[in-house]
Image: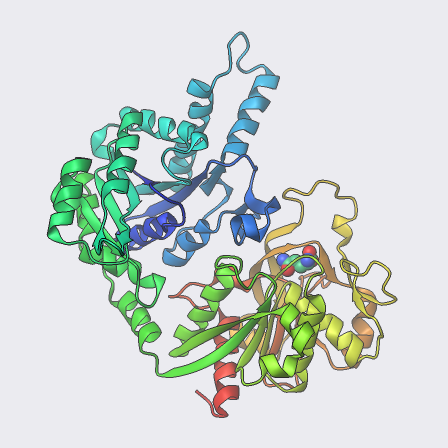
Length: 537
Ligand code: GLN
């Protein structure tokens, strides 16, 4: 078993997760079995209780774990199967240590950061190594070198490297090489200092990945090599991508990063097979078709709040050889200015998941616009609940119909709390979470897109379609095209007299990859293109 640790320096948001995932792509395409893991130094047990402003999207796994969005990159860039073992926070580490202490596992001892906290961190590496049976385990350490809260993780991996021996472990440091306009040049000092900080802790990285806006020239590489104590070829340029994050693996391959990793770890494997990946990039950069679709949400200004949704839309584009321009629409703007002005001209409208009341009426207006103007519509989780409320109000005539989440006194709670949620009092990890089977109706659009009648999709919600309204809404033309196999919960709705109107209670975006675009997104983009150009793809 080989171990790669990825640390980050200078500033956050450098794309360590992307770098780790892209290295995963290259190693996997060399025929190696890989696994990826993220350590997050914050004290929350998981990011499930954090707002998108704090943390961006919460990425949900099959087993229901609510995890860091970097795990989304890991799944999209590779074929790894992730579980709750793949994301560890300081909160989880301390919870485990304190449980053990109360149980008496450490009787007689003083419980300390070293060796007890660090030991727990190492346990998690070993646990995943054992469970994954991978050839290479890539572990990304969240945060930036020098953060106080990250220290136990760095100490843990330093000790771990001693235990497994130098030929089985590789440290990669992702750092920032800023371009200073006034001087007209790239600066290496922050990188030198960040690496010095790591070496103080006892970690010497063998590869330095330099995030930069402009290419690194030879002189700069020599400087970083000299001051950071890495060989010249160990200085890897990772320039901002021109078009797509999926270019990163190809960029790192050009820098021979995977060769260097394999050399260092004594991994004997062929060059990666990247032809299919190149074709994906080709379709992103120079697609045969183009379309604009709107995403109507409330965290529109944030880059990461709807990460998986944006990615899945792009994948849906790849499946149709169609470049997608994503128009981010603030639901509150629709409330202020009306849907016509803002949504006119879009090929499709998508409403993603969400919580809280802000912007809800704007979203309802957007769903109404899509239904009435025959604009392709894809609703995800809250987007399904919105479509239901809209249909109940304007087609079934249920005045003031609403979700009990937003209006507890509505006369028509067409969306109500799941029975299983009624007794739940704690907030963390208690929603209906993870992959659940859904049975699709014969003859439905969803079944024909999936090419299957039973599918498994990931969930994250507390509210659900209220079965008291099933008969009435069905009579009015809403099709309940997907339910749980016992038919108790509605999982997917469709409108038949519409070019494309599908909304799911689950989150299909979490299962989409560039090389395996999700069927619902594939269908949505095809319909959007058809709508925008009034012709089939
Ligand atoms: N707020 C809704 C619920 O809890 C929708 C959740 C979501 O979109 N993820 O049911």
